[in-house]
Figure 1 (tube, rainbow, N blue to C red):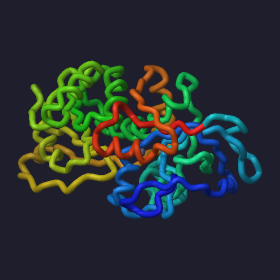
Figure 2 (tube, helix red, strand yellow):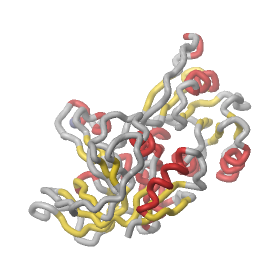
Figure 3 (cartoon, rainbow, N blue to C red):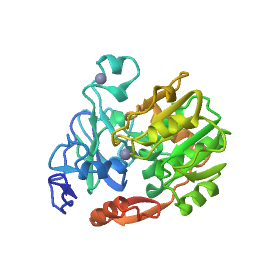
Length: 326
Ligand SMILES: [Zn+2]
Ligand SMILES: [Zn+2]
């Protein structure tokens, strides 16, 4: 399924089978989960996609061929996961200081590299993950972005005991399970009067759930904002204790309105989370399999990708959309 230009529907196309270069894996795609970032790309809010583009950065595939001299930690027929971070230069100041997520020349799967809304994909083997056997192809796909980048956002909350989450979608579902496993308390904020999402959050173990127009019953140590709504930043600052941290977990957010300095005063912190490192992925997949973290999934066929994106955009998905390919 090919994006020819932003703000258009994806087009079903026969394209040549990609050839793996040195160190790359040729994958037969089994499943690919749909992420909110895919919507931001289709809707033109992320403005630098390669075009035409095959979307999809939560790919589960089996290896059909290994490019180059065949030296790889993987073998033919291994099952691997391909995340958003597709390539880094390994030599810039960020890469050399363990922050490859900030690499100046990074390339991203399903954005600046073709992704997994297709029968075949190639991926640089150095950025692929072995996947835990506890999960089947469909179940594990949503862990590869919502889980992984959500986990990075969660780790930014440090040792916070009381954690608020604004925007209770896929990432929040996954991270809530990790947080509760680690004996944190989750306070879930949904769209005002979205009682169904609040019930879901409580059933996952959130200690409190309410609308984003409400204040929590107690001040929070940290907040993660997964909703792409900038006005939630000042709201969240007012909900945290002195020294509390507000983590913006999305790749795109509407503008943040002006707010009084007093709301930031007393060493409150606002930060964002960009991309992921391979270490985030390894850590998260290990802990996810132990818990084990579960996802609610709605399955679509590859050719139904537009339908999946439309349902996502209009908030009508009942779980994470996963394209079943093979
Ligand atoms: Zn994503
Ligand atoms: Zn770099």
